[in-house]
Image (cartoon, rainbow, N blue to C red; front, side):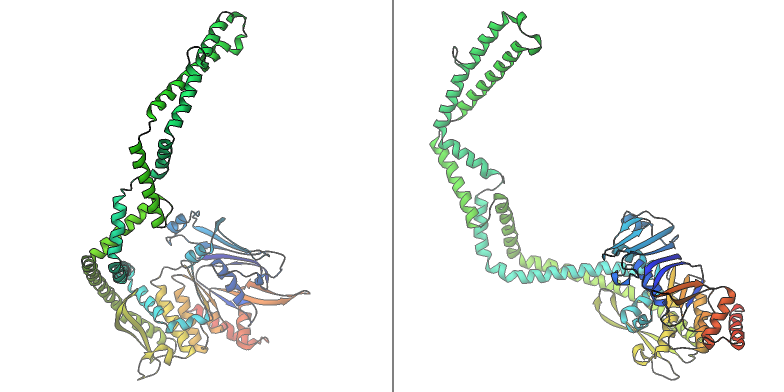
Length: 555
């Protein structure tokens, strides 16, 4: 859960340090005081795009930092996967620099924004006013059903099977699409393949070796002449270098005592003689191997010409590419010749995979159906407690073709009045009714979803009086399972908070700044009184505020 939020140089906030606690906290303040600024700053920590426009002082960086208690929420593996140090008390920091760059850190380890989004989904649910519109969307309604029914395992099994179906469908479509062209090109491809097979291509490096052999064959006599000359210079018995070095060593042996010992002259001459003698021996071996065979030269030249011709004919630059082309042609020929068999195999596979996907979709549907009555009855019970005694909610299910989420078309049908015909919620519910339905669903989800913190941004829009008080009561009950932070304009909701924060503006010589403070019991009473009666706080308003706070304390 959110333990602490520190903000500096963000929008109208020069500096704010807020300590949050368990249970339900409320944030109040006049319109425009900066309540939404807090959510904007917090959203940065959850991966929202950074904008240099939010800098209060354009010459200084903005820093938003929050401390979260994440013990028991199973995030260790997520941290390990990103090589980020895990700590039960995790600190997330986001910085926006004056130049426009943004940096993010988790426990002082630099991370990318996608990681913030990933862990943010497991830390906080920010329910802003526009999210009430999600209630009308089929995918949100399906998510509610899946959360309440606990379909994670069934949904994963089905998704794997559905992916296999789609993959085979693509293979089948590609095969059919390729078939006509492959059949038209079959004879031509077979001819090209036979030509490449005949070439017996094996070694990708054959071409440079072959070129060297051809050059040697063409210049065999010249090569032998040069080798013979070199050998003669090295090893002729009287005038060769080796013989002369041998004689030099013998001459120096006679005066070895008079030569500088540290120069090792005699030994070095002997070493040079041995090396040159070895070189001469190797040259003789090479000489014996160099031979001009006209037939062999012709065979080598013919193969070299054949390989060069294949490279040019097939518009490739190397034998590696030519070998790859041969295998590609082999595949095309095989696919064309075995099309009917391959088509039958893929069709059989698709049939089996589709049957399995349908089986798992039915199991998924059955698991979802177990939650329908619970969702409808629980929501209606909470709605009755919020001034809608005749509200009806029906979870309807129609079958649809297999999709990534199954074969269910889930719809929430709603009627607010007695004897009303339930229909799609977006068509019949007012703003205040949608707020109450959404709060009921969120309260229901809080019992099944293991989420540390939920933030309500004026979810009580469109209601007032006793209904607002009952919505506050529901949020307070939700706070038994999770941390609830509620931004509200309604005193009937605010009194249900266990901690109360006030956002307000102050003018300085240079600018207007937003501040936030945690209210004492006395200050809270005054704030509730202001919300009831306006800026002029009367004794009657204070008495009314005390009465409201006292009524909640007795619950």
